[in-house]
Length: 116
Length: 113
Image 1 (cartoon, rainbow over the protein chains, first blue to last red):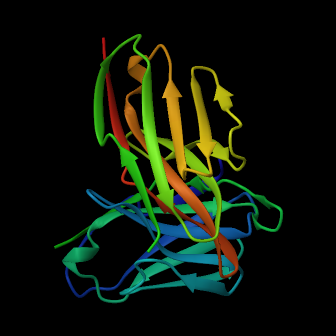
Image 2 (image 1 turned 90 degrees about the vertical axis):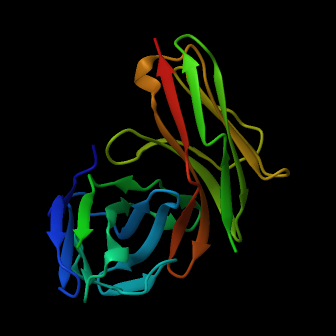
């Protein structure tokens, strides 16, 4: 399995509180992604990173921010959590994502977040 | 708007049956089609298909891509209870700085003894 960990694995928080989820990789892969998975919607991309300090928005980025200060860590922050952000959050990594080849994304174990 | 549609949404079969899962896609700047298997945890990678008409196989699983009809299928022969999972299809497209994936909603396969 790809060396990807997510923390925390489970979190319950209250509406309006800030929350930060961490994704840590030991593969030295350049590309990192944050997804959320909800029943009836499947996996949706929140933000992604194509290098240290290089990030961009995905399909459902409103209410989320990210930071990547070093290759191995990609942080997802909910500045003021809402009940609609209750979800399972997955981090993914990819070695290459451009040029003449594309490498598959490997997923972390997920974080189950409940916002009351 | 990009979209990936999987069918059926759910399927129940008996052990030993053969199943075919379908995936159609409309993805701008399409690069490849990926299949993942998700049990009660993170999705695990199965196949990536880039060229049309070339079948990829892994044991009892196989998959093929039709880039003209924008369609892919995943076949599982001689199903086992361990094949029970949600199978996800995703279209990879080139975007700013990276390739990204658009996922379908998945097909839930249940294999009963």
